[in-house]
Amino acid sequence: MPVTDPRPHTGEPVSLDLLNTRWMEEGERQDLLTDTGGLAIWLAANGLDGAFAADEATLDRTLTAREALKALVERPGDPDAVARLDAVLEHGRIRALLTAEGPGERAEFADPAWGPAWTAARDYLDLLRTAPDRIRTCAHEACILHFFDTSRNGTRRWHSMASCGNRAKASRHYARAKEQ
Image (cartoon, rainbow, N blue to C red; front, side, top):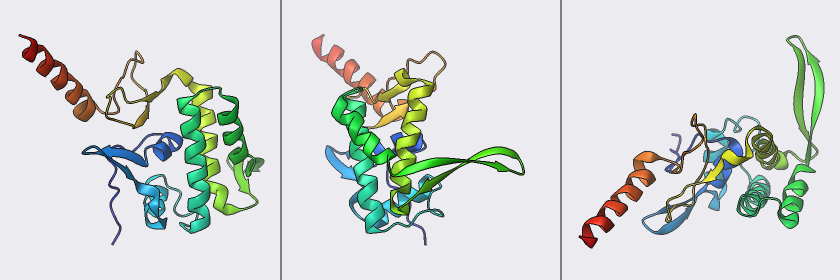
């Protein structure tokens, strides 16, 4: 029987979804990637479970990528953070090929355990190419989740209006009512 993903926010691009394997719940930090079972859940959530094993080596390399991505999101352009992501990217490459449908690409890894880590790092580069200013951390002070802002005007502030957005509005309302 498959285990359900316990995270409060899923469905972001794979790089941000990797960051979202850590979240806050009732003031306590949670971490999906404490073992290979959590890795299996994350791989399945991102359609990577058929291509990569949920083993200790893959978990270790995926955690390395998560820390590199976290450093870059917190300190964009920081040379150490850039070097950490580049080190992950060194473990894979894109092979151009011609398929029956036309030109294509395939990712290759000398060590398949680097596959999910490299995939997440490569996805982050794609987000940077697309719209770096739309890579966001939830604006709620008690939230550590990330999202890619796909709103029309690019002003989304919370990973979820239903949870963090409503909590922020309720806090402001409570503060105003208390002042009166």
